[in-house]
Each structure stands twice: as structure tokens, then as C-alpha cells.
Length: 223
Image (cartoon, helix red, strand yellow):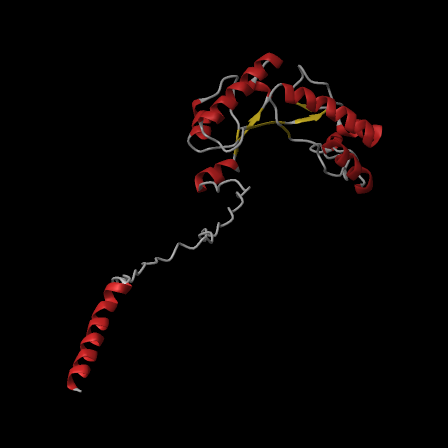
């Protein structure tokens, strides 16, 4: 009985040992691959810095220095047809902004035009914040500084009889001539009331003695 059992055991051993050859080699174990995944950058737009709206430009002119501001409130005059050293100093160094012209400063329209052009050149050299203001008394009647190159004006007392529209037209014609000659300010009209006809200072330089009458004429002259 032992011999057959031994034979069976040997046969089983041969079968077990032959199984790998029959089935083929065992498959190699798969290598485990680990992929390193890096997060992709966000596609959202990067935040842009907030833009501060530009402040609107200040329309006001730059403040003047104290010397310039005081000088612009001053007016000066001079004698003779030539610009004096004193006047030149007042404009260039003291920044005086207004010059008064009188009859002895010129002889005719041409000389007045040359004088006002020279004064404006000095004002530009002084660096004034505005063109030099050249002024004259051209009221009409007995107070007329410029007789050449401008339309003549009667006295205000006589002119007032034409009414507001007549005053406006006459003054406008005279003002146009003054402007052509370089005069920028006419120190007129006189707005005083002629309350005393015997007053030699005002007299016919006034449009009249009643405020209700004089007021509209003064308004017409300056409009």
C-alpha cells in the first residue's frame, strides 16, 4: 500500500511543478505612476488698481504776490511827451498797473498811439498779470484830453438832452476811437447830480439834477 501512495504523491508533485510552465510566466507587477499635478494659474483677470479720477483744473488765476497785488491797485501819471525814468521804475519795479494820460503827454493821434504802445511794452517787460491799463479823462465838453482821432463829445448836460439812446450812440463812437489809439479806460461819465447850478466844479459836467433823469443816462453811457 505504501508503494501506490508514493506513486500518487510523486504524480501530484510533478503536476504542481508543471503548472507554471503550462500557464506561462506570471505577469510582472505594474509600476504605480504618480503624476505631480500643479495648480494652473487662475484665469480670472488680475485686479487692476483703481484709477483715481483726475481733479479738474482750477480755473482761478494763481494768487499774486503782495507787491504785485498792491501795484495793480495803483495808478500813476507823468509830465511831458516822453516816458520818464520815474514812471518806468513804478511799472517795472513797483508793478503799477494803470497809467493816466493827460493832454501834455502827446500832440496828436499818432503820437498818442506810439505812447500807448510803448507803455504796453514796458508793462510786458514788468511781467504784469494783465495788460497795462491806460486811462484818460474823456467826459465831453470842457473835459476832453483827446481831440484828434476820436469823435467829439458835447458836455454831459447838453448830451443828456438826446436821451439814453442818443447818449449811448455818441459815447460808443468816442470809445471806439479811444480804443484804436490804445486807451483802455475812459474815466467817464460823471454821475454827480447838478444840485447847484452855480457850482463851477460840476456844472455842465453832469447830466442833470434829478436822480430819476440822470440814472438812465449814466447807465446808457457805460453800457
